[in-house]
Image: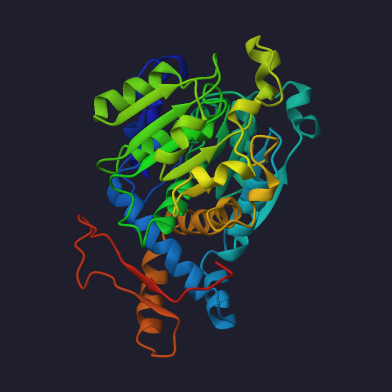
Length: 395
């Protein structure tokens, strides 16, 4: 934990001027497991493979009463603050339930008007207060960099605790991207995996933080191509395109929608982010009919195309599509709970305990499936871990 205190060498103004790689190095320190979850750039492919495996393990263990009880005792002594200064349904409930799965007791602040911030308390003091009482701070804020600032604040203190970014302004939503990658990998398990797939993103890509974070994680899968389809003025921002250029990821930007549907292996729909209209000076329509996926478009899609949406939705995604087998967004929503439970378990340092429990269970022939783990792991190289589970309509 001493390595986390390197932040003390910098004022916040000096820290803000550092490049993202340097910031991440300072904020994560030498902690062996993931500590803060702040941005998509901090993750590599090996981490995604670990998270994918652990998520599948937790899902399978939780199917039995004994397994669920085991999981609920892993972090029973920990407490989490859910600090949601921005409206949320899915992300809040997903994190809350994920904490329940691994036994963490939660408290929340969902309206800053009920906190001491209305009395003039600084953001830094609010975060220090939370860290005095809680072992995890899970936060969503309408302003960019606030999660990063919170991590800086706790790292400089004598009690650094993990900060998990549940959405920051129009910039980052790393845990949504993690669950999106998990959903895509599950969807493509019988179709050759993620590599070489074409992912189409449509809607308000300029202000949608989910597509920004997801784009960066997609760069970790060789051969992936991204199609950005958006109305005029709502295209993906240049910083993400420059990131993809440096990574050698193929992409196209387009102000058309229908012509790209037949090419897509997955379609990631998004709504118009009009909650940002006042802050950025723009005025938006609630939806753009020409960028809406409707029931009559299904015939244009590939048979195994995966349809995703971070939700909530408006008219951009037809409710009549919900029962089509290619519609993955309700599974995607549920996957968020499992992925975040796995992330919290890794952050809390109980990943090895859960793996060992699974190894014991996997020896029982009556169990639902087997996840093959490496016989030996020196902590440096993680092999992709294969999941072999029976089909379950509940998953």
